Each structure stands twice: as C-alpha cells, then as structure tokens.
Amino acid sequence: MSIVALATAGATLALRDSNATQLEREGLRLAALLDAARAQSRTTGIPVSWRPTAQGFEFQGLRPPAEGGPPSGLHTAGRAWLDSQTLARIVRPADAASLVLGPEPLIPVQRLELSLGERRLQLETDGLGPFRVVPGEASP
Image 1: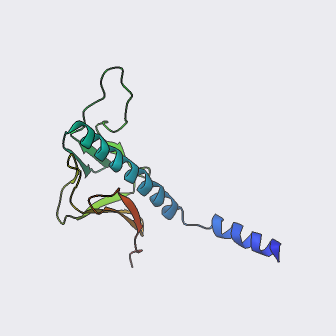
Image 2: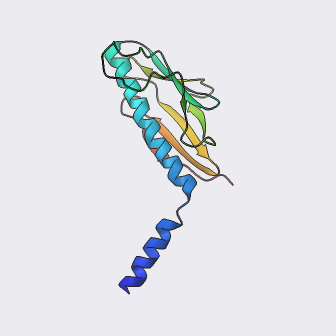
Image 3: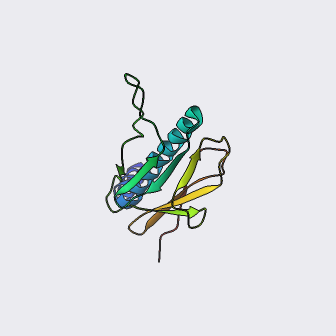
C-alpha cells in the first residue's frame, strides 16, 4: 500500500502543469519586487509606479543606488517575464495604466492579473499590507 501511495504522489508531481508552476513562480517574484519597490519609495519619499510592457514590466521613479551602494535590482530599464508568453493586466483600479506604489504608507487597493496559456493568477494589496498571490480561474 505504501508503494502505491508513493507512486501516486510521484506521478501527481510529475504531471503538474508546467504553466501553473511557471505562473506561480512569476507571481511570487513579482509580488516580492512590487513590495521592494514600495519600500524603496517610502524610504526615499519618491513616487514609484509599476507598469506592464510588451515584453515584461518596468518600474518608474526609482533612483539608481548611490555610487558604491548595494544595487537593488529594481532600476533596470525593463524586466522580462520568466516566460515570454506571460501577460499582465491591471484589474484594479479599472483602466489604470500603472500601479502606484508610494511614497505614501497607505496606497489604493490594487490588483493585477497574470496569465500564461489558460492559467491565471492575481496579485493584490489592500493598500496597507504587502502584495499577495491569489489563484485565478482557468479560462473556458
């Protein structure tokens, strides 16, 4: 019985949808970057925003680190998605071109959707807490 259980668990892990895994990894990465940019905005007092681009996304308003200071990795001109087929769409605020990350401690409620193939997930913040990954529904 134990051997059957182990074989079933192994098969389940092996058959996991690679798009779901890749999208989850992308969501966690982006949530961490959004929170880091938000913290940097609050620390420096400079407004920072995030927007999707054709190949990925970019942060606007971040200053490069002082000479000799540690790099944050946020101020590159643009960042590519881990998978080139990943798409991003800002859901809330509706029709927004970018997300505002600071410098105010309380930002608007914001949500964006990432998709890869038929898989979807959302990242959201209530405006006070960090961004978090929320699983989405597969499209029909």
